[in-house]
Length: 219
Ligand SMILES: *Cc1c(COP(=O)(O)O)cnc(C)c1O
Image (cartoon, rainbow, N blue to C red; front, side, top):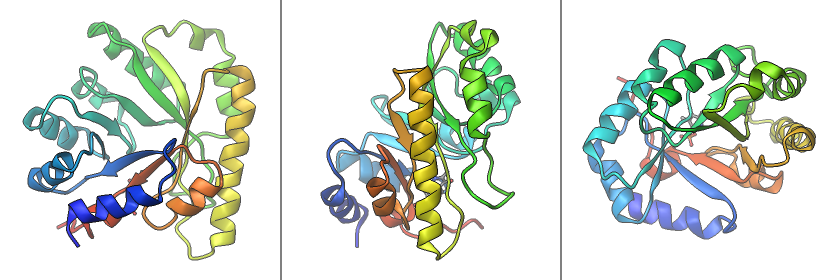
């Protein structure tokens, strides 16, 4: 099926309050433009330089989400335009984002990435560290970032009960953090293989790549 048709099919299954991030990493501009022409305006990338190049070349009404692991020394390449950074997992990173945002007189929206998977390979902070961060004085000094919610990645497994438990844990963490910071309203969870389950567990933002653009070739 075409990208346009894939997008249409997926949108039919999404409740209207759920935001779709079209994950376009590794894909050429022509594929992204097909999605753009079908009405998609939110794109997710996991490499800062690739996102910056695509931002250069594409229409300026696109919202670019950084969904991958962020290296502090590269924040400067996206600070001018990024619309939401999903993978914030330390105070040090938040401080750097704040610094770069200030240079551009912006407030950059961020999600705290919570470690919900068993695997050690998945990044993220613990729920209690997130809670401590939101209540710290150093955090309240950062006036150029805004925490909008949480993000999580479930374990890569066929065991859907485990995935469900991890999603429920993220929802629970969100609810706890909301008592500290009532403005948070985003739960970014769910990918091509599990976004329906994620929505059932309370996701408000899904990150879907291969179901829209087809399989990725990393070579
Ligand atoms: C690649 C990626 C996705 C999309 O994965 P698909 O299985 O292709 O939908 C979602 N979230 C993150 C963080 C990713 O790196």
